[in-house]
Picture (cartoon, rainbow, N blue to C red):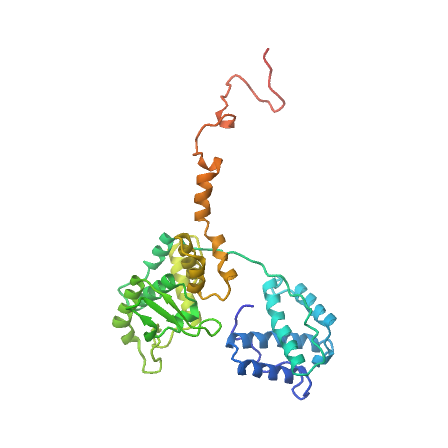
Length: 356
C-alpha cells in the first residue's frame, strides 16, 4: 500500500460511544501495536486500512466486530476487487493485499483478547502478489553520467553530489539516507551504520572511498554554512535553510538529476538501490552478501536481482548456444538473403513462370 502522510483520518470511523463497537476496539488495537513497538508506518497503514473497512461495514449496518463473519469479509474482498479509482483504474492486487493484512491481524487480536468468540478472518485467502522486476536499472556508465551533473561550484551542488554518491555506493533506502548522522560514517573502516532501518533494524554497510571523500568534503566545506542552530544535531544532509532534508525533498532532488541526464530511464532514490544490487551481482558478489548489504529479512526478496542481472546469463548463452555464436552477416545455407536474385523472373502475386 502506497504511503501517504495526509491520508490518515483524524479520528477513527464508527461510534466512539459503543464500548463493543469497531471504533473503540480499533483504538485499543492501535495502542497495542504501539506498545509492541510496531513501526510508525505499520501503525498508520493499519489504521487507514481498518478505518476504510469500518466505514464500508457501517454503510451496511455492521457496527460491531462480533457481527462480522467470513462471508462478510469475502464480500468486502470482492468490493475491493471491483472498486475503481477516480480515474477509472482498479486498485492493484498489492494494494488489495495491503488492505487485508491489517484486517486479518485485527481480528486475530480481537479473538485473542476475547472481544469476539472466533476469528472470521483466519481462513481468508489473500490475493496473490505479482512478482515484478524493477522497471529501470542503471548501467555503470549511466550512473556516472548522472552523478557528474551537480554543479560543484555551488554549496548545494556539493551536497547533492555527496547524496548521489551515498545512494550509489551503499544502496541504502531514502529514509536511511535522511537519518544519517555524522558519527554513522566510519572513514577508517570504510563503513556506514544504518540505524533503525526498515523493521527497526540496525546494520552496517560498506561505502566506497570516493563516496567517503565527497561526504567529507561536504561536511567540511558546506554543512557548517547550512547549520541553523543546534536543532539538527548531527544530521548530515541539510536543506538550504539548515533543516534536515525531508523525504519529498530528496525524492524530487534525485529525480531531477536522473531526468537531466536524459538517458531514457526514470526513477529516484530506489533506482540507485536497484542499481547497486544489480551491479554487485553482475560483478560476481554472492547473493547472501547482497542480502546483508540491502538489509533484506528474506533471501527471496533479494533473489529478484538474479533475474534483473542478465549479463552472466547472456555470456553463457553467447558461449553455448549455436545461434548466438553467429555474427550478423554470416552466410548460412538456406538463409533467404543468401538466395541469388533472378533479374529475369517476375512475381505478379500469383506465381512464377516455370522454365523447362
